[in-house]
Length: 120
Image: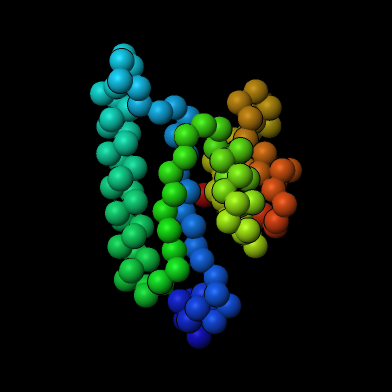
């Protein structure tokens, strides 16, 4: 059985979430860089929407949020009543992860549903 049929059978929905740490402000000195990032996110959204459509998946959406990525993922998962969160990790070492923090680590400790962390 193909994945789209399983999604329909169990009434499941795929949610793709992109989170920016900052939003573009009118007088932001880094406006050009942030606009470039926004265009890349729009291209990424179009790419995944095309893949989703090609696979025949009808129940999927792409969301964008601003702020801390870990908090945004947990918040969206709770709001959408997620059954599972699938996230990636960059494979940072212990020292770097301790100082910079880890989105996947935050999500694992704060989500109210199971979390699957995929390595690169």
